[in-house]
Length: 287
Image (cartoon, rainbow, N blue to C red; front, side, top):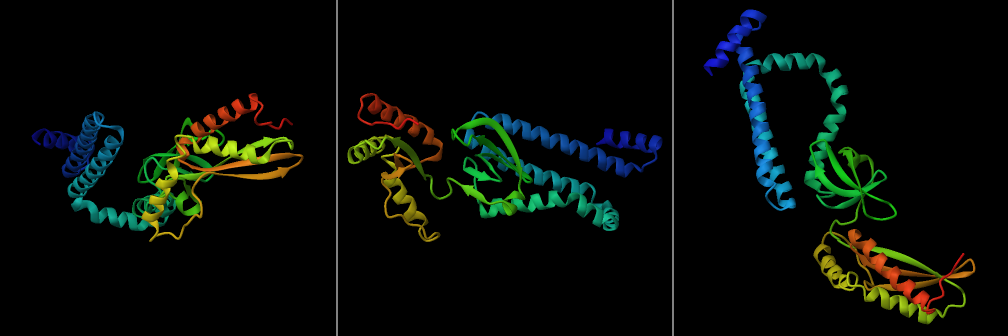
């Protein structure tokens, strides 16, 4: 503290601003450096933990240290706050315009924390972007983008302002329900035996290791959320629908699947369908 007083006195002598203001400024600077140093230490400690726990613990510590830092700054500048408020009152209109988006993003962030339209690791679609939520901040949240056709990560991180939760519709593929309905369309010629083809396709999807366990899990999830949402399905098991389209037959394999595992299911189903095609058991349609 002695060195701070000496240095602040030297600054007053050479620059002209009073010593107490320089002391508050220097202590604020030390506080910012110290808090950021603590954040870095905790971050390195939490990196030794499992990834999800590390993220959750670090977010909590980060919030506490940020609040502590704000408290220290208010304490150091308490006697000058009156003058600051007076200055702000004259420029409030300009500040409101300049900071409007930040203010909206901040309160949208509070809404996300309270209402929880999505959480970390949820797969969502918002404003035309689909991805897994990997970070949620005071002003923005980050998505690990998922390709529209392959349903897997593209490796691109998309930063989205919080206010989009108010202006765009959100599709949460995992809130309450971990599973979504997916379909695979199989086209065959008109000569196909519909009953046998339907039976073979149904056998393929029902024997899939990922799919066959889901209906019972889905029933449990529906029981858990029944007081909150009026949602029901007559059938949770896989089913195959048939339709004639433009000179060929289309079979629609409908099944429940976790959105992050859908590509693996599609891959296995199509490989088995191709095996049946090469064995001349399913006459696939060739345009």
